[in-house]
Every structure is written in structure tokens, then in C-alpha cells.
Image (cartoon, rainbow, N blue to C red; front, side, top):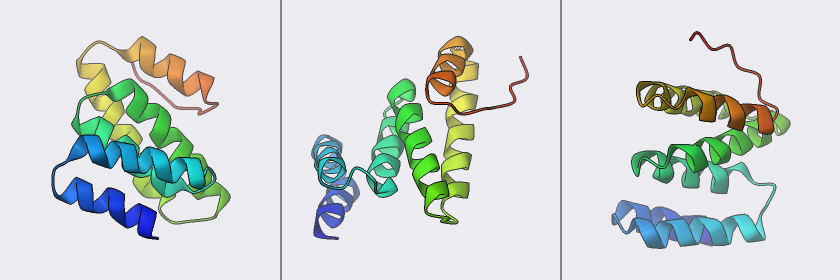
Length: 110
């Protein structure tokens, strides 16, 4: 819990570089915990780093599903937000590649 709180505190203080570092540290200690991937994916989304955001959010989604956590719905929504952004930027091929590499089936309307 303290490692997660460090990341959240940095994020709330808008110190995103330190928040990213803290989430990466959390992931290193707890590689099966979805919260590290989820938090990192959200920050990357807000920084418009959509490809790494998508990769992290997909990992969070699968971990939430594995835990039977209702937070998998939040991860699905974030994947949808990332899709919308990448689509508007003409990056659908990258979106498709990342989802395929991560074994996430999505229905995409081109």
C-alpha cells in the first residue's frame, strides 16, 4: 500500500515523472497487481503517450479479469478512450498491432 500511495501522491501533486517512476517501482515489486499498470496507463494517456498507455491498460484489464475484479470495466473504458484518441490521430494500425500482440480481441469499425 505505501508504494502505491507514493505514486498517487506524486500524481496528485502533478509531479508526473516521479509518479511514473513510483508506478514502475510498484510494478517491479508487484508484477501481478493491476494497479501499477492501471496508474501508469492513465498517466501515459494524459501525456498523450497512447501506445504505452494502451499496453499498460491491457495488462491491467487482464489482471483485473483474472482477479474477478469489477475494475476491469474501468480498464475497458480507458482502452476505449485510448482507441478514440488513436483513431482521431490516424493511429488505428498501431492500436490493432498492440491489441493483437497482447491477445486482446476488439471489434473495430474502420
